[in-house]
Amino acid sequence: MDDNTGTLDEALERLHVTGPEFDGWLTNHGPMAVESLVRGGQAPRVHRWLDHYEQRLDAMPAPGSPIVAADWQEALGDSRRLADWIVFFERALAERPWRDVLAEWWPRLLPGIAGGATHPVIRVGHAVRTLLTTEPTEPRLAELAHGLGYWAARHQLLPALTSLPSAPDAAGALDAVPRVADQSGGIRPRLAQIEAFPGWAAGPVDPDTARERLGELVSAAVRRYATHAHGNAVMLVHTATAPNAVLRTLPALPRSLWGASLGAAWAASAAVTAAYAPAAPVPVVSAGDVSPGELFERAAAHGDDHAIKFADTALDVGGEVALAAATRALTLIDPA
Image 1 (cartoon, rainbow, N blue to C red):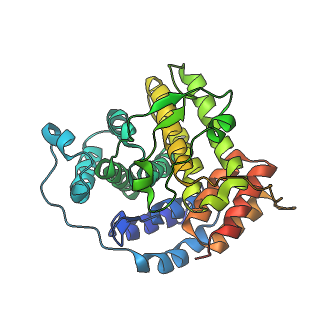
Image 2 (tube, one colour):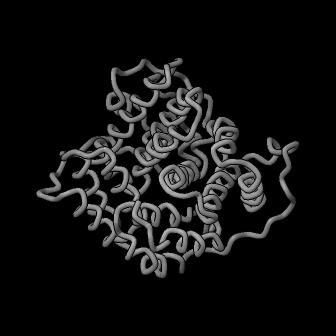
């Protein structure tokens, strides 16, 4: 990341006076989008993009009562305590190394990966990627606190699930995910209908295999978007960006947590697939003669936060179909 101008820190400081959600429970994608823009060489666009985006955001809610170690389980998943959770993690990260805090809380938060439509884990993934590759400045540590706090407040378990026969690979497993019966309404009533997933990520695996299979899942989800995005071009972005957030976080975690991370990432990707996948695919439309850098510049100019983040993940995967998928997002999602 080339951020000698401090653009990312400046943008994060602007965003940290806003809440993780707005207009009820819509997610504030600002921190994730600006990290992607800076990472992708589009730092000069960041403040102009943010001038437009922040007009829709709400102020950070006021804290209520502090969360302490003795009552964290009671407060988990309580969205009314969102600001309390962020303060809790700000304090924890001021007192201990960020990797230690992450390692302690990752297994506690992982079962609720679907909460907030998977946005909290995605925000954490962007924050961790920054901390792994740059200096841990105060705004970047604060961003991890905001991401973890958001996740804790929106922690949500999926229904108890039946395991269906497994598939030989991630692409086949995503194809085998049953669609929910009622394809109307928001994500919460859709997730409540899920009854079963293919058992693709079931059972213990060694850490290196878990990482390899997680990469396979991200690649399969990106490529599937090229043929299935018409189900819901915005929401199906998360079938790829959520597991990629987990993949980006693995290097900061103890290897003993990698297997569980694979299982949770599969659950997140499969859940969004079940909720929004269309009944039938369409053919892949080529992106044409475009380089990865040119494609990301197009995404930055397009301006939609989901399109920017999906392009960021698609370029991690690489290849012709991934570029086609990112181009499809730019076609189907309305520009900002």
